[in-house]
Image 1 (cartoon, rainbow, N blue to C red):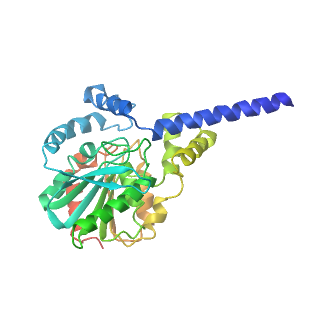
Image 2 (cartoon, rainbow, N blue to C red; image 1 turned 90 degrees about the horizontal axis):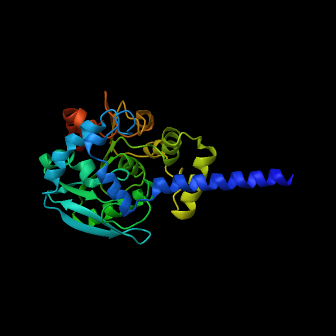
Image 3 (cartoon, rainbow, N blue to C red; image 1 turned 90 degrees about the vertical axis):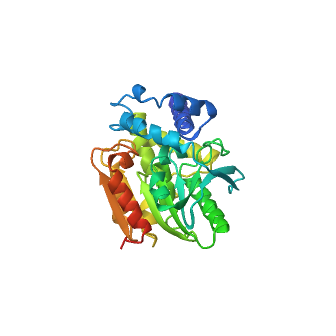
Length: 319
């Protein structure tokens, strides 16, 4: 009997340790990791068969490089806010029409340059004011652990307040890519002042759903018990629960027009997540699915269609 108890305790400790490892690898983002990621973005180093951005990874990294060079020359004004948990977060303002403001939310361990250097061209042509965010633990923004859309949605709410302080009754649009897409979708039922539209580019529907998918795909492990213990550590350390915000529930309780965009060959965030949210959405909506497109590459693969859909959303043409 004692040996059974010992075995159970050992298995429990091993599962706790594995869960902590998974939690840490997903939520922790320090300076060393940022440096390692930057060195890994050379298109010549991409393994097209294994990279989560396949099958358009290398092509996309090469496509956005000149846009990033041009982005770095933009005249951006630095802004900051204090988060609900006392972090200083930074955003960068490209001033244009004060009546039309787009808040851009980048993806997981990414940056405003990587995810919006190309897409910002849509808004520059319109003359919109654009606010590009550094998510918590990204760029200059404070924080050790990522918000993984859950804390980030609360941060976006504060940025919306900031925009409403800066401008008189502006029309505000939220545009998110990947984890940023999940963030803006999770804002859909928050009744944020003057938010008139949402663009969700390849966002996941919930942390629990994307965790189940990636633990199997990346770690080749069953979700139980490893995902559940990662969830445990997340709640203990960051206060983030995996099932607080569910995308389908958020879009089923909103009147904000939403544009869903997704690559059909996305191996990072399954396209089916956007399809399910589109079906659940009760507000005016569009779904743009792009053939042969991997994660976050829809603007590259379908530039005209992407541009047209965003402009139609902002021009109030969704019915």
